[in-house]
Image (tube, rainbow, N blue to C red; front, side, top):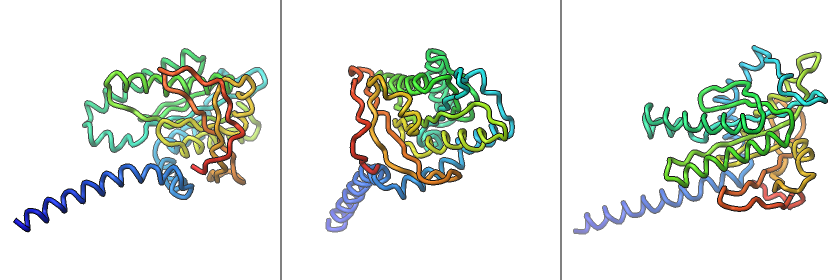
Length: 254
């Protein structure tokens, strides 16, 4: 009886620790810049890195998605924990989930007048002629995924990063900096999060209809200095959008 009791107690303790870990680890990652940076490096080696390598090799013409002033806003996205989801769901079910995700992304891309530069696996590189179009597309992607989950489908958490740069530059610097910057920002994001560069923030904050929150300063590998990133505080589809810009809030060091 004593051995049975110990076994039960041990099992209960393990379940408790697993529950605590499942609750605590994501929060530690969000709070710790060191952990966040480490995970960003891992993400870079997968989807984002592969897309950037393709862009640098192929040099796609992005002028079709550029604004009259020659700038283009880039959006990178991918599904959080996609490898784990594949193992859990199996190939067939994963393909169904992936196709549903891709349909949502492309529907919102068309709705907001963007251009699909490249998709690979569960990741996308999209281009827009304006920063506002890109940010609103990102918000509507997140809301559509949230709505899908609310209807009983498997929740899919997507991380998104957005940056604005010049579409064409003489020495290829666009492909060396602007693309990398957008992809690195996306790699810093967590599932369900939209991170934007400080330049994008300046371009979209004027109307006060997009809720923004300082995310802090980050070192993005391949770029000089520390980059200030801003979080788009999008609201779920069943809530009215908040016409509040929290761009001057104190950074929460997530």
